[in-house]
Length: 340
Ligand code: CP3
Image: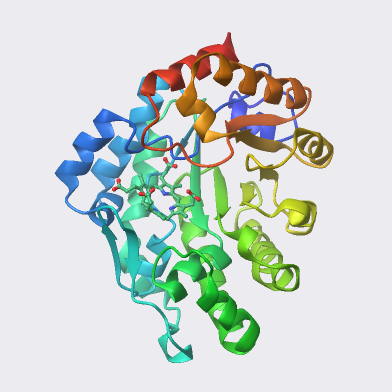
C-alpha cells in the first residue's frame, strides 16, 4: 500500500470504497471557477497562468476531497505549443486555423514548444507541492487522433470529413501529422511527469469517429508509441487511456497499447467492463447526465456501477466530463453515496 488510493488501484489493488475523481471536475459548474476564470482574461491565459491554473485545479479538491487532482489545462495546448493559433470563443468552443495541406504541418522543435507552454510544467510543480500526499496528481494530453481532428477541422466537428479525408486520401500527410503529435505529446507528458505528475491520462475523445481500417494506425499505434516512449523515460508512471466511443474496438485498445488502466465511457455495458477488468484496472462510467438529474436516479445508476466493478481494481468516475449545468450539491451527494 502506497498511502495513495488511486496509485494502489492502478497497481492492481481493489480499494473499498474505490478511489473517485471526475472528468472536468474543475470547471463552469463551480461558482469559484467562474470567478477565477473572469480574473484570468482568456481561457488560454488561464491555462498558462500557474497561480490561477493551480487555484482552479485545487478548488474541487477543497470542496469535495477527491482522490485525485487533474491538472487544469486543455488538450488543445499541444497545437498551441507547436505554433498553431488557438482561441476559445464564448458559445462556440475552440477555434483553430484549419490545416489544409502538408505545408501546414509544423516541424517539432522541443525548445520552442516548451517556451510557448512551459508554464504548464510550473503549474504541475506547484500542485504537487500544494496537494496532500494521499491525493494523486494526474497530468494529461489529448491523443494524436483527437488533437489532429481539431487541427485539421479548425475546431469541433460533426462528421470529421476533413480529418478522414486526410486519413483515407493523403496517408503520408496524415502519418506526418500523427507523428508530429506523438513527438509533441511525449515531450509534453515527459515534462509533466518530471514536474510531479504521478499518473497521466490520454484523452482520445473522438476515437469513436475512427472506422476499423483507420483505428489501428490512428488510435492504437500512436497511443502505444507514446506509452512506450514515456515509460522508457519514467518507468514508474501510470497511464490511463480513454478511447471514447471505441465500442467493440475497446478491448484491442486496452490490450495493444500498454496502458495501465482503461477509462470507459457510459455506452460500455457493465458486463463488458467487468470482463475488461480481468485484464487491467478500469475507470468509469457514470453518465454525466445522471449526475445532473441527481436524487434516486443518481443513486441507482451509481449502485449498478459499484455492484458490477467494486470487486476488482476500479476507479469511480464519469463516462465523460461534468457538464456546466450540474448542481454542485449533486457531486457532494455522489461522494457521500460512494464513501458511505
Ligand atoms: O477538470 C479537468 O478535467 C481538467 C481540465 C480539462 C479541460 N479540458 C478544461 C476545459 C481537461 C482534462 C480538458 C480536456 C479536453 N479538452 C478534452 C478531452 C475530454 C473531453 O471532454 O472529451 C477535449 C475534447 C477538449 C477540447 C475542448 N476544451 C473543447 C471542445 C472545449 C469547449 C467546450 C466546452 O466544454 O466549453 C474546451 C474548453 C474547456 N476546457 C473548458 C474547460 C473548463 C471550458 C472553457 C471555459 O471555461 O470557458
